[in-house]
Image (cartoon, rainbow, N blue to C red; front, side):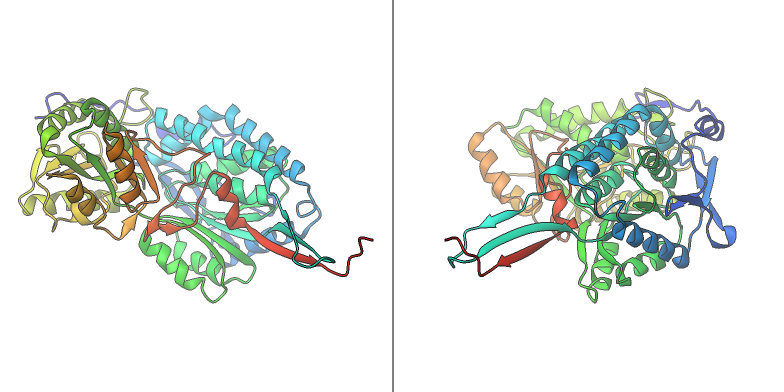
Length: 506
């Protein structure tokens, strides 16, 4: 079954690679424009998930350190160096940051691959994608418009302006360690806010490298602060309860997002949550099957299936079922698996042992419930301890975890259906609603299904939907708010109404 599988096991030492990138690899956190250690000089390790090699240490900061970062952000927000800057000035600083990230694409990508396991070509793609948000919001900074509304009273004027909310706490995940920072921080800085970033403990080096370039771009000290820690819960609680933090933006699991939402209620904070999904991928009889297979590969196997918009449940109509499964199986078994440093690798490792256990557990659960594993379905220890074979499972029952929960791994679960109403009902039978995909060449069907899918984003005959220009976010338990696009500014500004009365016009 796996005779076609191509694996790559040759590695360059991650540690030696990182040493060669020493200008951007940071071993300290950034607070108030200073590169500092944690209280008591505590650190934690950063390891390469492909090989387990040690690639660095970063400060293991505590609540007191995080409070210092909040204080620095507040001070920077209130200072003339930031609050009084014009939109044009902020735009110019963001443009300088964008240029530096662009110039250092290769170095950032290598850092990202070393700490996340992501294939190097995907890492380069993420740098370009993430940097597009910096460019976009550099432009949007000058388009945060107010309004003059016609007054119902002759001697009054109604003026509306938008002002920054203040300090924003940004909690970002490991699967897109650059893009999730730039998508949030770009919008916040464009609006005039200052930020405290808490990156994932699995991928702090990318965050620190990008912060280093922000410093070089001339963004004042304290405007961007980065707190590294492997004790996320108490620092997240501080962000929720601190009166000096006026907004929280979080990308991660629905469970953690709900906790942050609850804990922020007392302060009535602005909260933007981009949470888990359970994306349907529907292939109708009217679909171009070759395009559907291409879209399935792009949607499912990017970053080893570890993206929030990855297709999770594949619903395939009777008429094209056999053809789709056959072509998809052929493509999956041809994937090249190995250390992401090799340019032709397409699938890297899962991020950590917890995620590895989750993926393998979901597959075994489906197998125990009589689902049919037609390819994959096993670990690949000969490549590395966190590698799992790209997998296709058919006849997945509704009781299986693969059907009801987000797997976040390289596993395709396929369910056969008879007609359009059945597909819509099954696709919407989930409490999540981030992204959805479907393939159809029937124009009438395209409009019907796009409207009826209960998701925040729909890919029609397309498996890759993210762009800086488009609003990113979900419905139901997949979150609130939107990131990217012109709407990405909304969570970082307050609307102020000014009534000017007793005016004389004669």
